Image 1: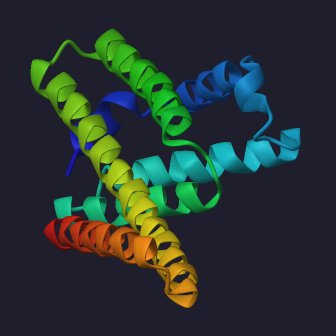
Image 2: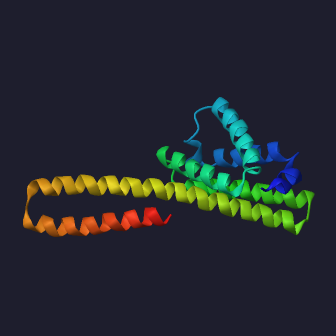
Image 3: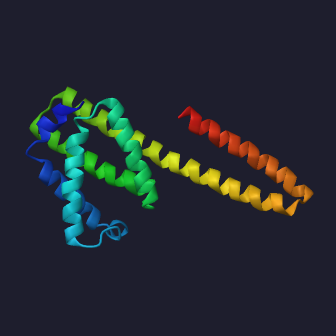
Length: 174
């Protein structure tokens, strides 16, 4: 749990999230994700509440929730590089606010660790979805080439079966 971060930020959270969205909206690539000021207002409240609750999660719960968050963002077709960039903005605002309030090395270290973990777990969620999609694509390809029964397709099918087993191994390892 990372409650010392919450204690250090208690009064600055509104400002951190407002600056976070101001920066996102000032970028033409990001403002396409948002439809209205009302949507942004709801997202700020929801993400701020999720951030606060995340600081109270156990390590296992943090992992489970952020993997699911990565999967959800993948399903929404938000590229990981965009998610990661936005997380950098939030991390920078958080670290800056902590440093203004407290020069505690432990709190700063905890904040860096927290953001490193949520980035890694979110990336795992994206990877889960990518691997699942790759398996679906391989299955579709194998179905199509098995229908043609041409000899050169047998070689391709063997390579794709190897790739499929490799993807299963990666999924099992994670």
